Image 1 (cartoon, rainbow, N blue to C red):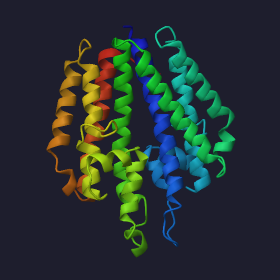
Image 2: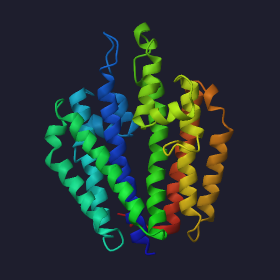
Image 3: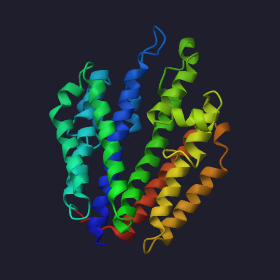
Image 4: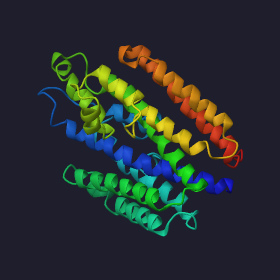
Length: 312
C-alpha cells in the first residue's frame, strides 16, 4: 500500500473518532448542569485541557465561559481539533482515497460534514445544542460502523482500525486525567458529596456507563471506574481494549516489529499498575507515561509507514 494512502486512511479514522469524542464530551458536560447541587458552578475550562488546546484558546478568547468554550470546541475553524475542523479534515483525507473507501462511506461523511457546517450556529445555542451534538455522535458512529461492515480486511482496513483505536486510547487517558480532579471545585462540601455524579460523568463521556453497570456490577466509585477504563479487555473504549485492537491491526502489516514491541510494553504497564490505589499525583504521572507511549507509537507508525514530512 502507498504510504500516502495509509496515512490518509489512518488520519481519516482518527478525525472521525475525534469529532465524535468531542461532541460527546461537550454534550455530557452540558447535561451535567442539570445534576449539580445549587450553588456549585460548572467549570468549562477542563474541556479545553482535555483536548490539549489551552494556549490556542487563551490566544483567541479572554475567558473560559460556556459560550466561548462551546464556540471553540464546536465550530472554531482556527481550532484544528474542533468538531467542524475534525470533520473537514476527515472528509479531505477520505476524498483522496475514494477509490479505496466504499462510496457509501464517502457519501455519509460528506453529508455529515455539510450538516455540521450548515447547522453550526444552531449547535452553539442552548436550544439547538443537544440535537446538533447528537447528530454528530450518531453520524460518526454510523460512518464507523458502515466502514467496518463494508471494507475488505486488507491493509487499508488495518490502518482504519489502528487510527480509530489509537485516538480512543488517547481520549480515554485525557478524560480520566482532567476529570478526576477538575470537573467540580473540590473546595466546597457540596461538590464532595457529588463525587459519584462526577465519576458517572466520566463514564458517560466515554459512553461507558451501561457497560460498566453490566460488567462490573458494583456501585460507581473512583477505584472501580479506574480499573474498568484502564484495564478492562471487553469494553471498546477501555485503554487496554484499544491497545489490543491496535496490536491486532498492526501485526499483519510488514515492518510492524517495533510498533508491536511498544504496544507490548504499554500493555504490561497498564496491567501491572494498581490503578485503583493511585491518588491524584501518581495517577497523573501514570497517565503521562501512557500518553508519551501513545505519542511514541504514532511516531513509530509515521517512520515505518507514512511519507516523511518536508521541513519548512
